[in-house]
Length: 239
Image 1 (cartoon, one colour):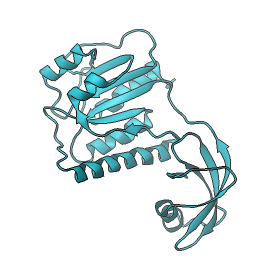
Image 2 (cartoon, rainbow, N blue to C red):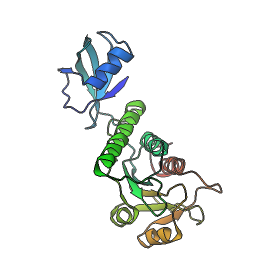
Image 3 (spheres, rainbow, N blue to C red):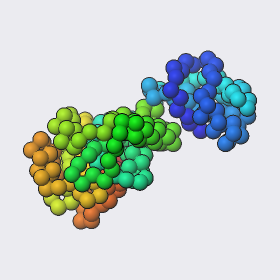
């Protein structure tokens, strides 16, 4: 069991667990004093922990040994994902996190399905997506949580993003990964209806290379997973 906690953590000290972690441990999993689990706070590494108090209102834990392994890929990847409705965006963020993505920026485009009207709704959506990434880290063993940025326009992101290799998934344009090793990559994935020809041409003018993943058209939530898996196999830590 692994849990994220947004608090400073110090080995061989006692802490009061936040309500969500305490609820899951005590109420959902019915853990008792003496139960061992892992805590991490996204700053690097993780701590073995032992539940020392499992009350109805309060749960406390003792931090034990620290483990510095972060399970980070040597390839830094920044995913620019045009937003989609329903749970498709959640799925893309969750699986991209499992596949080692470093940063995720939700994007708007000409054919973007999701419109975040109002600051309050946008803030809630962003907080939800960040929780999705944290939950994925809890599951997959990552100790550094990928950064989920605020949504921006595709044109703004593509003009500012920095990476040695920039790729845009474009099913109608033939392209291959270039030879040679790189340490960072930016990956642009369009909406369900695809990027427009004008958008593809614009990002190509900014240094993005068109990349086609086989003969089949992938859905907007499938495409980043397939692409990230290939990048990890070719340039990252899949072996």
